[in-house]
Length: 288
Image (spheres, rainbow, N blue to C red):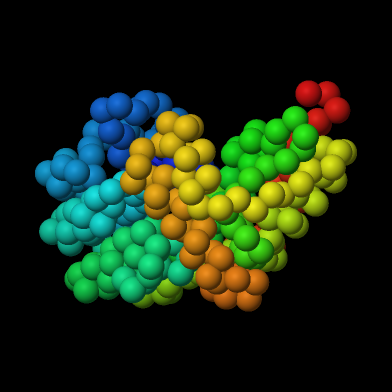
């Protein structure tokens, strides 16, 4: 039995599908505010990362756990709760979704919190795999494109940084291999797309897809923070997102965020999905 924590996330949902396709017994944790509807054959169980008792109950009879915690101010503690519950429950393998560049010494909130959670997992007695995906390509289709204004402009505080953005389905496929195939225990996988893209590159790809000129406009951090707050994000989340893109700017055109790995192809046997491929899956803009 495999327990998926974070099954409502993009990665978690794709992972559930991957595991079902591999004929695995799957149990998915569901908070009280979330839907309990998962694919046929998947057992939904109540639980919350803030409630270690519910995690221990959900792990009863479970051999393996996938752990993905969404952005939260207490993200480190929530991840520790799951790791501790897995250890006390005798879970045989825990695969944790982290972030590329994770380090307890990072200046950015997300990589720092993930780095501390990664270290807690390493220090535990739980056999584990750490999967570190880069920024998600789906952010382009779900956030960037809808933000394009009437003059064809979109804004981000990324400067000229290059980022090897990855499709969430590829991250799920890597996690599925780690969970179901032997020999991955103790591994840490950086999971990226096939190329490092600047937001200027993203604008060019969107222009080709939409058939009109789209322009990326670098924004400053304060304007970005205010825009995020205007969209309804809280102070902590807005600040953490601004800080992540500050970290991308520090990474520049050839730093950690631009790293391109062969993890997807090496583990799954097929190339990592590209931005062009994802855009091609979108509805025909001429029919919109």
